[in-house]
Amino acid sequence: MSRKKQQALGPVGTATGLFLLSALAIACACLAILGVKLANAPVLQVEPLFPLAAYAVGVPLALLWLKLSGWKGDAGLVGAVFLLCGIGLVIQFRMGSFSQGLAKPAALLPFPLGLAAFMIGTLLTGKGRGAWLSGAGWLAYLAALGVLAAMLLLGRSFRGGTYLAGNLNPSEIVKPLLALFLASYLSRRQKAFGDTQNGIPVPPLSALLGLVALWGIPMLMTIALKDLGLMMLLNAVLIVMLFAIARRTGYLAIGVAAVTAAGFGVQFISANARTRFDVWLNPFADPTGKGWQILQALAAMYSGGLWGAGLGAGVPQSVPIVTSDFVYAAVAEEIGLVGCTLLLLVYATLFSRGLRAAGAAKTPFERLLCVGLTGSLAVQTILNVAGVTKALPMTGITLPLISHGGSSLITTLLIAGLLTGLSDRK
Image (cartoon, rainbow, N blue to C red; front, side, top):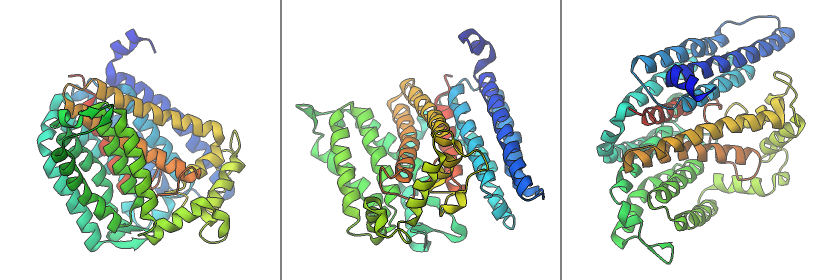
């Protein structure tokens, strides 16, 4: 689409056009999957179609809301978000995730609630309102500690993670809360963390100790929760935000070394982390036990080859917990390397648009918040894909907007809404 046409349509018009193209592709995919399902079991269940109907109705309503609110942001960002949402719904529909929740209507609510979170996020940061959140940094920090404390006191262990009643995982909200806190905290100390000697970051001792003390509390709590994935993600986001505020590559080098050392060291205090590390090193040591999941995932991806087995033609059920942690393996089996590459390109578009919003931000706080939120989504994607492909140990991190999980979907759409508002040029 030419620049003149984009200007004539406006951001919402462009986003609507992108959505219509995405919706057409998603509808074709759903029809193909439905054809396979009916061929195998000629009984049409209406309930599993509800989330898809919510997508078809909810996204246009969200776009209409953006238009009526006068939003002038990045259409590419919104288009990438809703395309990934559609792909995720198609994949979960194919794997029967919605059929499994027929007895629980709450299982069908995450996407509508996520759309509400998206609009709330846009409302909070749109039209230049993002700057006022700078004063909410400490409130966000305390809220994050409160969520982690609730998980420690009330949570129960399940599949290596900690959940509240109903398998709720409120720790997902910790990601945007701590990103908001870091953006507020670091933007006020930009000069201190920019000090260097011979290219090596040397912030004042008081600034360094203050950050270490404040950051150490939630990190110790995540270790107590045995949530290796959340700990690695949050520390990676901290490194990215330090680099963004100081523009010193030394932070990247020191940070990567520190996160690697911490990830390696956690295995000595967490049996679950040690098991994941051992499976990563040699899954064949226990191929029918602890190594079964990753070996089945690797076999599924290998069988997909270049073009995949086709939608509905794979056997995703052979991979344990395939709808959440290992959904990328099911995607690779059915749409192959080519399809996975295209999927990752959509993610790359989302991340690049988030960084573009950071570059256009008017204040250091808004720029850092964009970097932190975008970095959170990017690191989460990398950890999931790298874990499934055995490039890194599995962390239990979900694939944003694709994996099954209501808490993850709602939080990711909230983050997307915040970025959408921050991209508003008004």
